[in-house]
Every structure is written in structure tokens, then in C-alpha cells.
Image 1 (tube, helix red, strand yellow):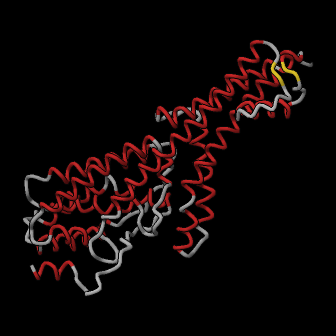
Image 2: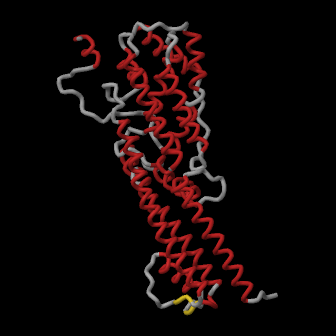
Image 3: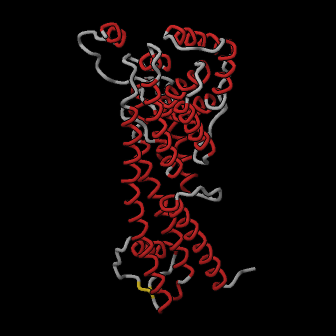
Length: 368
């Protein structure tokens, strides 16, 4: 049984319309409306597939510095690839439409010529070797050319927004420093809370609270920013967030004072950010590793003793540990899984030169 040529052309044209509408809708929802869509998305599928392949190759690189150099270009370059995917799908969709309308077109007699006409129209090249016949076909050609111009304009307009959000994220990370070679939650706590005065630490928490709100807004609107990594090795945004969040958790769990508004706000904002990342379809987080309770207890004992040394009022150890365990259960699994997905080492290095005369934070406190 053979279908009439007209029916075949109609089916092909309808498929082309579906592909064009679906792809342009995905483009607009990704770039303009920035709303999450659980239906088909070329952008979501593109990042899921390309990052899986790219990360698989990165895991074979043993040298951490070489691996980091390999991973850095993925985020910016992936935008070019995503634009190419959108343009290719739109041109193919319009090619199917023109193939379905070949009886109204002069020069289209096979799928290749249909896609060719679609390409020169979409990119507004217009050689004139294939000409639309009739008012309806000519209007469609104008519509496709307009869609090509709008697609280019939307993507070009997206770039400054992405890089501005990226720079805001990274500039705050430059200030994360405990005056050592590797920043840790305990070192960060020691720098700002040694002596029992929590005011400097609360001011830090306020700044990081604002940072979390900014990153939440930008990275949920444009999830491709998740793959924009620091140009310096050992300075992942997820690890930096974990350090500050751990410090806030220590204060909330152990320090027996009634007012920890800044620490509470930071904790809520940071967990909100991590929940948003975990729930986004662009990211598939693996199951986190098991973390033995006794190991956590030993680590917290070190922090608890430091808080006592600082002269801060603390709760009984067992009560403080249970509070800390409950707080950490909300974010530690997500941080570990996110670091695994992003191939971010669980360390944070400030990448700054030490003061040449050997001046340290401890020495500064002694001299004062």
C-alpha cells in the first residue's frame, strides 16, 4: 500500500512544524523565561549527554592540574555547541516544512535542497537560487528569517548575563581565605571567631548569605553556569560554599547563645540553593558515600575543643553533636554528590602568596 504524495508531504510538513515549535519553545524557555520545563528539552538533554562523555574522559587524567585545564573550557564552549544544536534543529525543522511545501517552491526537489533553502533563509543569506512561489510560502520564508534573527539576538544577549553572574560568583570566592595554604571550616572559624567575638564572623555570614541568594537566582535560571568552573585549580564554588556552611553549622550547633540570625539565614539560603541544584533536571547526582558516625564525632570534637579554647559559651558535647549531625544531614550528601558530578576536589586553596616576613593570623593576634 502506497500513500499519496500529497499525504506524505503533509505528514512531513507537520513533523517539521512540531520540531520547529518544540525547539524554539526550548530556546525561549532557556534564554528568556528561564522556567523549568519537565517536558522535552534539547538543552537539558545536550548537557546531560555531553557532560557525561566529557567527564568520563576527564576521569582518565591522573594529574589534577591537567584534569582541571581540560575541564575549564567545557562551560563556555558548551554554549557554542548548544547554539549549534538549536540552529541545526530549527533548520532541519524548517527543511521538513519546505520539503512538504515543495509543490509551492521553485528548485526544491529533494531533502538536501529543502534543508539548503532552510539554511540560507534562517541565516538570512538569501542567494536567490531557490524562490518561494505564492503569498503563503513567501510569508513563511519571512517568518523563518525573522526566527533566525531572533535566535541569534537571544543567544548574544544571553552571554553578558551569564558571564556577569559567573564573575560575581568567582569574585566572592577570592575573599575566602583563612591565611593558610588550604582553607578549612576550622581554619575559617579560627580566623574570625578566635577571642570569643562573633561579630566579624556574623558579618562574613551576611555577605555569604547575599552570595547564596545571587547564585541561587542565576544558577537556577541558567543551569549551564554549574559547569563554569574557576580558572584556578582548587577553588570550586561548591567546596567554598561547603566551608562557609560548615562554619555556620558549628555556630548553630555548639555555641550556646540566643542570637545567631546571620548563621541561620546563611544556613537556610545555602540549603535552598543546594536543594534547587539537586532538583534540577540538568544535574543527576549520584548517591553520596557513607560517612561513619564515629569519624564525624572525632572531627566535631576537634571543633568543639577549639570553640572552648576561643572562650565561647558552648552546649554539652553530646547535645551539640546531635544538633550538628541533624544540620549536616541536610546538605553534606548533596555537597559530596555535587563535587563528584563536577569533578571538584574536596579542598579549597586561596592561591595567594604568603606574606614574606612570616606574618600569621596568630602572630597578629599576639601583637595586638
